[in-house]
Length: 256
Length: 82
Image (cartoon, rainbow over all chains, first blue to last red; front, side, top):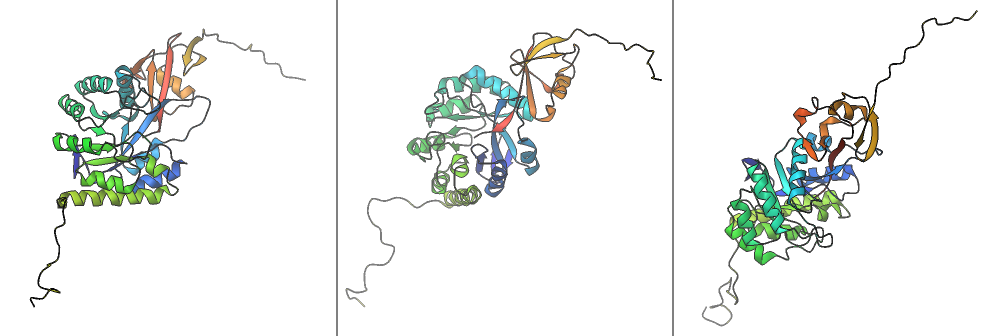
């Protein structure tokens, strides 16, 4: 069972709510994923257009809602967004993400650390989205973050675990849960992340942009569960040369 | 024979105040609290956050804080995101 800030999750697959073709598909995909933590963004209401109520159906599913600070370009804006999320959703959990660069959406490490410290000091449960930087992840844990969310590759890129060597170091050094976020494009990549010892993965685009999101959500659920089981069972050692799995002596060559 | 209402109609004139709500100028009666402002604009209180002049207002204050002339009020809601 995964525990983050005294909250227990039986599923290690977290999901985003963005990019789905319609709300019904999104809700069905989340249900199929068995995710218990879903992310949301925040936006100023357009008074002149009617919008679907996103919250009520999610709340009725019983999933924990995690507002994010997407759109924030610096620590000040992210802190503001965290306060918004707290009043909107009655939660002190916040996915802290500050990415001022619109092309690659690379998270700003300096602003993220500044915001994380202040938000932790204010009592928020902070889950920061960061580059796969082992030093930064340690610093974020030191200031009180409840977990770290290093990227596999750029948001929405489906490039998978491009940062794998650094993710391994982060996992090795971790004192808080490590959630691999962003870039995971296939169930096999989610499985790999879990085999490496990640505590959870967050997947959005790979599910939402699939031709069959509900089926893909189920695939990710199975992959994450399998990867976690494999991690717990312990992977075999990787060797440069062959080591026989069958006896090689005393058969065709004689010696019967 | 037509009936004539002998009672003259009384029009109560109140000085309306002007403020900005999500970028739109609105006119409203003074003394309206934030909850009242949202209700008047058919905004569900359950799933929003209110910002007055760049300050996020705690939910506990929505019924007590009154709208003032020239306030810049912004209302945010949750949208799909990753």
